[in-house]
Length: 380
Figure 1 (cartoon, rainbow, N blue to C red):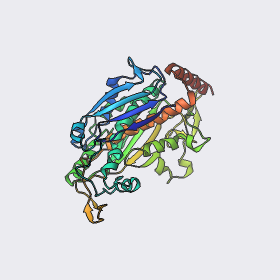
Figure 2 (cartoon, helix red, strand yellow):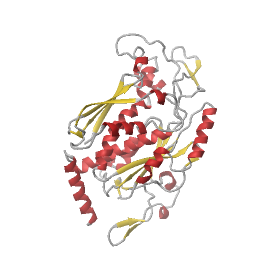
Figure 3 (spheres, rainbow, N blue to C red):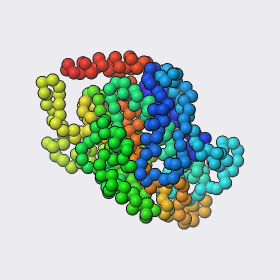
Figure 4 (cartoon, helix red, strand yellow):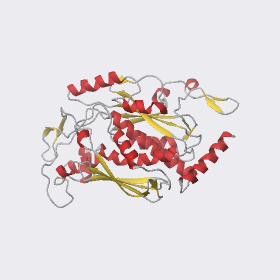
């Protein structure tokens, strides 16, 4: 089953993704992976660092002539700013030019410094940075090409930024290009979102928001009810909450459903003479920890970025005196990019569950098993 590790710091020489368990025969193309990494950099409200931090990748193993081999895949994403940071982030013995002792509220700084017994927040922030999600995008790309091979597609869009929301119909696969072309990756309501970002920027503040991920083409039964750690909704919640700055997850109508009576909370079941159908999708495509065959719909809420141009109050860790938090180069809003990362994490979970259920060392074996299952379910 697909598993992975990432390594590297935000201002180190590069980020590394090692992926084990991908079947052989998947089309793994450098230009497509580069395009996927570029999607993670999208969005109105990103800072100047996005112009500086380019993604230069090198495929080190697991791929030959554009196809996966079945062996571990290793990819390095080079940091083009490394020459500026080579002394400050050197792995060799030395001293920091500047020690960061005023931790930022809302960041991993203080608790990380306490846990790992360091008086320099850079020892924590470098790995806590969302820059790490570039490496996870490599894993997500692998998962998405695996899912595409069995007829499953995943996309994301921004539902809200601050108090500005995108209301209307749920996007479908054909809408993804339009969403990516939007400055805020929204299907509608982008003007209000841009205005929110501009207002926050003028106030030297930051904004959070909500993203939604949709998966199409899923058969019923992906996941399981038999153990808590095999419930698909539980695994999705864990994956999405693992993204930096995420503070909440809901499947389907989630929190709205909690306010409804049972008679209007669930998706009634019908049969059209060919298949089981539902006229609503309040559950978001899962019941009992398994997919229903409807589109999967899951949302994640992102808090505002904790690095502010108008820093919050804190205290220094060395003399415990009042201070304002230090500043790093940052964004006003990273919600559009967070949607792309959420898309990757959902794809990873789905790919893992497909492998758990259907196995297959080659993409052909996986496709054959999934096809047989779809035929069996269709005849149920």
